[in-house]
Image 1 (spheres, rainbow, N blue to C red):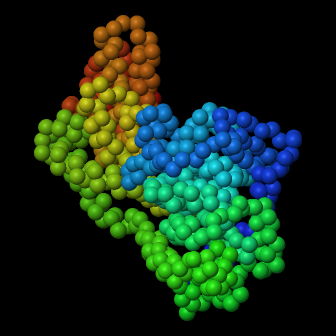
Image 2 (cartoon, helix red, strand yellow):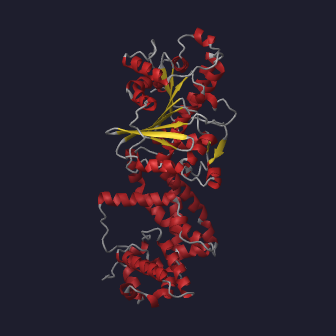
Image 3 (cartoon, rainbow, N blue to C red):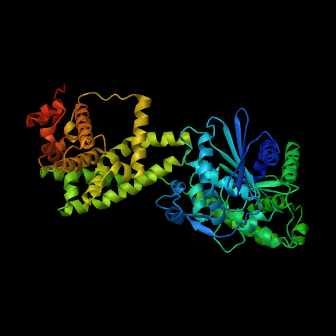
Length: 570
């Protein structure tokens, strides 16, 4: 498809949207006075839930005295000063924070307890539309953002349809949502060129940026835009071009008119024939005609819009947008470098073992230049796999499944090799505890989850014995974190008596170790004289509850048999 055809698809897409009756139905629920529907009243906010056999529509509205201000507030401020963390899942290592409209988000936070209850009550098996008009649409967008975190966990994708809604956030928020085509596709914003509210914040000297798909409507036609910079430019230009002010948009009449035109196949401008030879500038003019309700250059001039300047600017923005869409994260490009880094770890692991200490404990003690030399590889691998996981999570479900299957082995090997070093760093610092709950990076959790899902699909064929056990990596990459917790508990029990909870946790760890050894899922490095595991066992063995583990640990000969995969576990 040519750039012209790709851009102009918006004017072809609009009839599909308007002919589906989706806009008519949604607006009908907004404007309905059905007395049987329960209205929920909050602080400055009202919402209602309409349920049919397979569809739930949630409508938001604000009270008449609400005053929309232009101020933006950062997600960091909301977290630190309002104790609001629920949008933090949008942040990444590249997008550390984003900003949202203070008026809208403060209204959202004031009602959050009730809105959170609403979220939990929504039937996940139903199709869901979240909607609102004006500032109600802004609240609908925020509520839908709240739902994005659950997409991919079995719940159906929500669709947020707003009518004449103001923008709600900055460019960082747009980037956070747009990094997932699934997330971005959840938002459809219907805007009349006559409506002033959608343009109120876009004209301010503040860094607002739209996201999702915008359906710009007029009495004569409609068109869709996805490029956020083009949407913003069109909003700003239509403000400066309207010399006679704005009318109040009647969205009910507007969507009904568009529906009628679309089923009569009268929404696509006459003469529009998308070919490879059609200029991008010409197709943009068609878009502008539909979006602004202007059928001729004379009308454009009458509305004081410089069509040539606007079309030229949009042309440049669309070329930039399409070129950026072609730039994708390609894990294969850096794979060879990652293989080199993993090879560096294998050498480091062997070097440590030759010194009578496992690489985990060697790195934790940090007593040689070899421990420092491996750090650059550690950081490169972490950055690479963090990006890999993030990329996979942003893909549609079928693509994501194929993606993680292809990279599952390498990701598992990375996690088992490298995560222990982050655990070592974590516990090397004083008073650090509970790594799995407080210190573990999310990408390790996701990589482990992928492996478990793969095992369920294929069946776990692991036997009770292993060949070449000497070279394996411990299967549970959090083994060392569990061990560090056990060491801390031993220290606490030495200084106190009667700590039944601590004793119980130590028994749990003891049984966990035995079952892991029984499956041959633990590296024999733990038996080296200088290992943290041997330190724990020497402190704990007198209190050992699992006699089978005590029997195994009673002789170094058993360690050799384990390394050969020849020890018989009762």
